[in-house]
Each structure stands twice: as C-alpha cells, then as structure tokens.
Image (tube, rainbow, N blue to C red; front, side):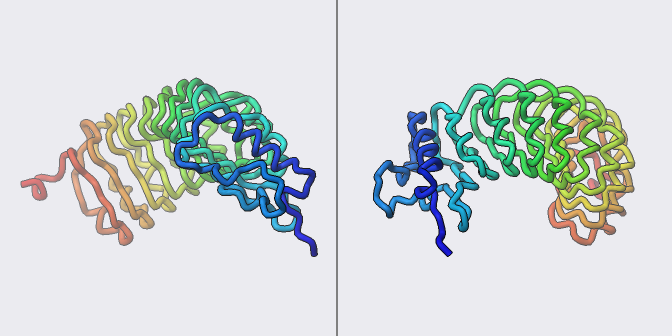
Length: 293
C-alpha cells in the first residue's frame, strides 16, 4: 500500500505549518529549524520536528511544540490541519487571550497551552471542544471563575488549571464530569468550603486543591474517595481536625496536609491503614502531643 505523506496531499498540511511558522518572530531553540519550504521529495513535513502524521493517509494529527520558547502570533492556518487531534504548545511565550480559532479545532482530544502568558477568562468557545480528554491551562494568567461551559467537556479525564488567578467557589457542574481522573486547581484564589459533591467524584485518582483560600472543616466525605492516589490540601485555611476517615483511602500514595491553617491531627492511627503511602507531608500542623513531645 502506498503511504501518503503530508507533502503529497496537495501540500495543504505543509503550507499550513509553514504559515504557522511565518507568524512567529522567535524560535529561540530552533524547534522549527526543520520546517523549510524546500520542494525536495525528502522534505516530508511528516518528518519535521514536532509533527506526527497518520501512517496511512499522511494527515497531520499531532503537533508537539513544547518548551521551544516560541513567541509570536498563533496563526489560524492550523484550521487547515483538519485531522489534528493533539496540540501541545506548552512552555512557550504566547500571550493574550486564547485565539478564537482554537475553538474550531473540534477534533482535538488533547490541548496543552500551559506555561505561557495567556490571560483573561477562559473563552466560551472552549465549551464546544467536546472531544477533549486532556486540558492543561496551568501557569498562565487566566482569571475569573471556572465558567459553566467547562461542564460540557464530559469526556475530560485530565483538567489542570493551577497557577493562575481563578477565584470563587468550585462549581457544582464539576461533579457531572464523571470521566475525570486528574483534577488540579492549586495555586489560585478559590475560596469557601470544599463542596460536598467532591466526595461523589469517586473516580478521581489525583486531587490537588492546595494553595488556595479554602476554609472551615475538612469534611468526612473525602475519606470516601477510595480510588485517590494523590491528595493535596496543603496551604489552605481549614480548622477542626483531619478526619479519621482518611484511613479509608487505602490506595493513597501521596498525601500532603502541610500548613492547613488552624487544622490539627488528633490521632495518627489512621495512617497505619494506608499501606501504599510513600509520601506524607504534615508540616506546620498540630500533631498529637505524644508525637510532638
């Protein structure tokens, strides 16, 4: 069977990639140095760095352009990559709001724009990207509350919006995202109590709510999240005591409870029920006297 390449399909994918490159004014590490307009048969854009194509059709399906220190305008020429399902632009210097055309890349299952300088609120068109399984927006300058249309992304398994300027409460629609396995909301300005519905998200494997402004007591329901491997509640403003029900989370491997405000630990007996626990941090928290003394 003849295997088509990105070059052979009318040059559409190749031209789209070259147009994308032309809108950049910095490629500090030469990430796109192989992206050249030469017409030689050997200059197959499926072999360009960061580009992955379907072996049968030659359509561009994936762009991995991470950690390139790229700077400039994101070109809508990416819309011509109509089979693109994976886009990683993390670790660059793109700024401003997320370009509107990104919402038209409806075949995307994976979108990572973390570690850039994007700002503003999450635009409404993100809610139309319903095939997304992976959405990583951390380490930008996004702000506002988590918009309701995020709840439309019911196929998401991974959501990371840490290290931004989000605020408000955790909205209830998060609980309808039943495919989520990884949820990271750390290092924002979320506040209020941890809502009851979080305890119903028993499919979660990773939950990070650290470095926010959550307060009041840590509710018992967290102990029902028996599939959790990683739980981080550190650097918040809780009071009361750490529930003994934490001992029910027998799959926990990492537990971070440092600097919980006025929260204390009255007993450590529940730790003996966590056989897989490898990392434990209880820095700055009041421990039983027989331990601290």
